[in-house]
Length: 129
Image (cartoon, rainbow, N blue to C red; front, side):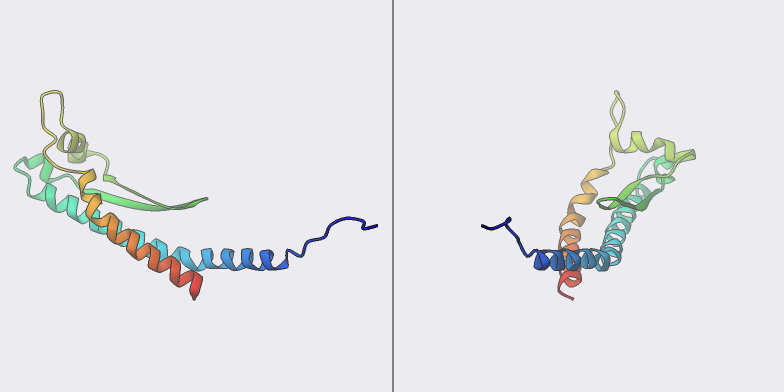
């Protein structure tokens, strides 16, 4: 009479180790890809603000920060703090009286497709070597 059921999971453990190694290899590639996309978005927003008819809006500067989270990478793109940058909400979203003449989120759309393409290539390179 058998004393239990046994499974050989060594292949599964080996694959899990390979995936963990691939994640470690992928992070620098993905970070560079996300950084380039964030830089492109930041520059596009700053260029748009620089062409504003409003002198205060022309002084607004947008920056970005890349952070590592437990689940991956994150980019935060937004206006710097203080001075003319405090006008950013009015420039992008307006007030009850109107405004919001400068796009903000819309600049991300053209970059999203390229980001997806390059992130996929980076992940593929990390997995396949």
